[in-house]
Image 1: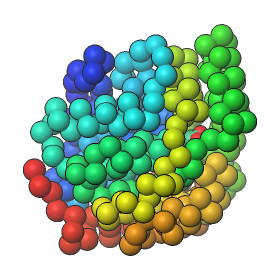
Image 2: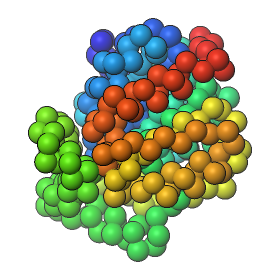
Image 3: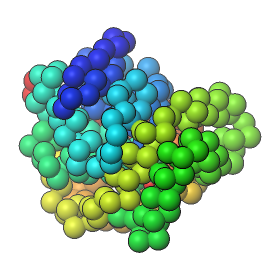
Image 4: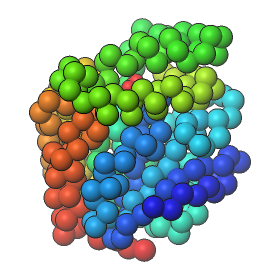
Length: 271
Ligand code: MLT
């Protein structure tokens, strides 16, 4: 695993790269970091060239002031692929990373080799949910990230994970505690204003895998089912005993689905 930083759109973006084969761009959720994908990068080293960035505002990437739109994030990722001279990639997003992956699919369909949508949704926020995010952003800038982190933590993991997997609980807590107020606020503003991706789902032609934790309380299985119905030829995998972070909670089941997907004949690297 090589750790690097590169300058994209006036910020320093941290990323890791490892493995060989189909380029896979792993896009973490909110308010996490590239550490989310450790079990995938470790177990799937033989079936992909894994490109794992910290998004704008998170991990070791810069956190400039202002809103981070889903389109802006998609352009950061496109810039990262340019910097790495990768023409096309499978884009895999968890939750907010899925919102970004759907923006990427709309803005750069020619760069999309495949799509993995994990524990996410296509729909936009309701007016009420968007206002709650804006209020949380203001509170975060005033008081720090603790309130957002405390509010989110109990919803992220399935009850069995909370009770029986202290290592996963620790990993998630560490990511949450490392989040910066500016990064959290920027992403909250961006998510509050994000577009509804539902109308574009039928236009996705890249092979698509949708994964959801059966106990996901933030983006429940019905959201995944709706995306699966709308995206032509997509495959849906529901992971038992997993909540919103199914890739961390049940990595064996998650990675099995990804391994099968990456082995599909249509998914071959072009650069
Ligand atoms: C995430 O995990 O990225 C967030 O829960 C997404 C959201 O708040 O909508």
